[in-house]
Amino acid sequence: VIFREPAVVISYFEDFLKHRDDILKALGGAKPHLLFQFGWHRETQERADEVAREAALVNRLNPEAELVFLCNSERETALISDVGLRAEYCHQNAFLDERKYRIHDRPIKYDAIYIARITPFKRHHLALGISSLRLIGDHSPQESAYFAEVMRQFPHASWKRKVFSRFVSRAIGQAHCGLCLSAEEGAMFVSAEYLLSGRPLVSTRNLGGRDAFFEPAYAYLADDSAESVREGVEAMKHCTLTPAEIRRRTIDKFRPHRERMIAILQDICDRAGVKHDVAAEWPRYFTHKFGLRCFNGPRVRLTRILKRRK
Image (cartoon, rainbow, N blue to C red):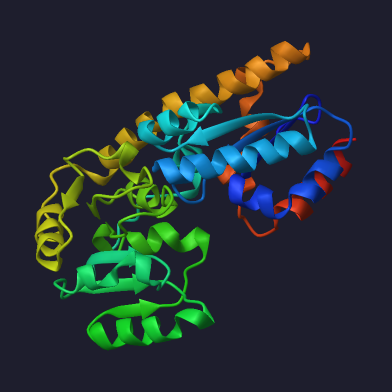
């Protein structure tokens, strides 16, 4: 919840659909302004059409609800807009709190690090050409066979199940560069976490929008082959930008998306006749990832915040 009056809620669309009835009930009779991010891309016509059907159901349940979709790429924005929904290019990674990430002056132990769930769509096999590799990621019980196969393929890699968020930059700082190897997913927070920690990265081309903050100087786009990924890692080992410059350029790219969010919220307040200076009050509203998928589920968090703000 950003505001109680007017009622403004930010959620992943997928999470909202799972808890839709509880959230609408918690909002009571208020006219809700629902701002949705996407946990998985909607960069195909089929997926955009699916969003339109789901949004129509939400509006039937609450005709007063205003839905705004915060998209992670210009293509996604155009597709969602074309199916008759309000879409704004307002990238989720711009709402990482940069204060949580630091540049660590630590000895480099690995050529590359891949922080990713051990699941098939992450395409770990594309890292097979990297001899010095750090893998960090868990897996579900249903992915045990894939996990076992990855462990067999990478006997030389150092693997850890997870790293707590406050130690992410420290882990990233031990490698020359980060890896992003999926062909499609969401915007992939860790792609920006590598950069905020001052490390370049190697990425394959993808659907999902993670490349929004990339520059060739610190983000190598590899083909879908282990050889091309290996070549990218070798190139990024010799990145000429300092870690501080990589971090600075990334934060600069966040700014238009944050300004767009502020403008969206200000417009909602102005139309509701509620006097908020969103730009001036922004530090009060902004939290890391807007709290999405941070410890508590959306229904629990929403109910608690609404009670506190009554």
